[in-house]
Each structure stands twice: as C-alpha cells, then as structure tokens.
Image (cartoon, rainbow, N blue to C red; front, side):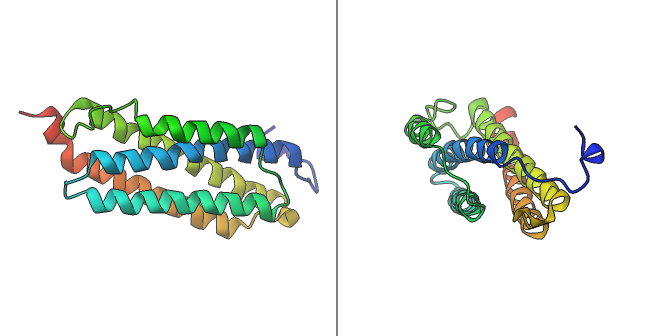
Length: 173
C-alpha cells in the first residue's frame, strides 16, 4: 500500500513498528562497531579525529532510536539484543578490512559499507517522519525525524568527502 492509498484516520500497527525499529536497532549496533573499527583504520591520519567524532554521532543516533522505542512504549526484542551483542563482538574483528589498510581498495570498501549503513539509517528516519505525518497522534514527530535525517545525511557527506579526498591514495600511482 502506498501512502496515497492509506486509510482515512489510520492507526499504527505497533507490532510491525516494534519489529521494524528492533531490526534497525540491531543494525545500529553493528553500525556503531563498524564506525569504531573504521576509526582504528584511520588512526594516525589527518582523519582520525573526524572518524572518532563520526563514531560518537552514530552512537548518539543509536541512543535516539533507543529513546524513541521507549517513548513509544515499544519493547526491545530480547533476541535482537542478544544478536546485537554478537554483532558488536563480530564487528571488533572488522572482516571488511582485517589489515586496517589506509591505501588499498579494502579501505574504499569499508567507506562504501559505512555509507550503506548510514543510508539504511536515513531510510528509517524518512519512514518514521512520513508515518508521523500520516498518524499525527502516533508520537512520531515529523520535525524530530527530519532533524535525525539531516544529521544522518551530514554524516554521509563526511564519509563521502573523506573518500573523495583520499581516493588517489588507493587507486592512483
């Protein structure tokens, strides 16, 4: 069903929303860990502090998601919490860039994956903002979701810029 065919005076399917948000929370746990390992990859470079700041921002966005789940009276899935912890542990290994290479194609793959994680987060904030418009009493404030979306896009722009500025170190001789 597209938004134009939404019923008059719709209500949220809270079970589906809870499931949706829990899946994003699971993804965010992996995302925070991926940003931490990326900060390790860029340790000792001019981008080290920027990656540390991005890691903190991603962690804050995760906190916003957790707070939203609580504010909406939804529950965090115990199974997804366990899976999230496992994803955090697995993320420490950074299977994408085991050598923490700063000058090889794997570093580009790592940047691409970070972009993908942020794109997933951006999609969630867009969906939640639209749901807030469709169901005004649902507790999803469109302005809050738009602010979160903007923050996510700014993080994507940082990653894009770093990739652009360092591209030659990976692919040019």
